[in-house]
Image 1 (cartoon, rainbow, N blue to C red):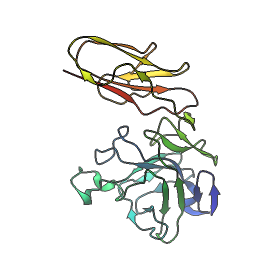
Image 2 (cartoon, rainbow, N blue to C red):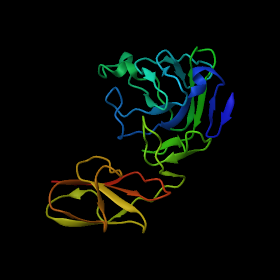
Image 3 (cartoon, rainbow, N blue to C red):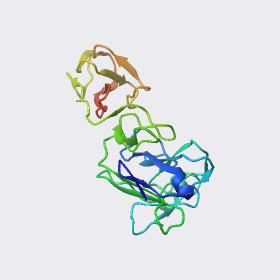
Length: 250
């Protein structure tokens, strides 16, 4: 086995050597919808070789003593340079989760951290990955495909090359002047945030990201109707904080 930084190992030779674990997101929460129409955890695999590799029939497990815990199906062929996310929990055998839920892996990933193993024959691990405790809405990913370094990143990228929003520290949440309250008349809300940070917000209940929502330059909001205001900070070399939201009800 070849040890890789970030707790990942790859076997020498064969299809397993061309595959790499590249990213894992345990606390997906509300970002990426899986095959069961839920927000399941996922791990990403990349084909770093020069030939196609079919993922169907491979085994994935979180237990080194039971490598055949789940057999993948429905993930198809991974072409050279291609990335694919494998989703966990809510398998079709465990409930009514839609026609594609048979593709879900029948176990959950631990938010406290853990290990994953990918095996082609079920007798030895071709790939293994140790991941740390999760950070909500962040993933743990390779900094570069050929590098051994892993870090948390604030913009998970399932099925794509990893983004560059890597960091080890989180931003503090914005300080909001008014949280949940009964709406009886128009009023103003102020959100204070540190210099150098970008304040993103949504009014439709969705999670603010760098590509979803709008940017507020001053953190001032005039509430003139029933509103769900969700706020989140972003900054270079810092992980985004869990969103802060104020619910306003009639």
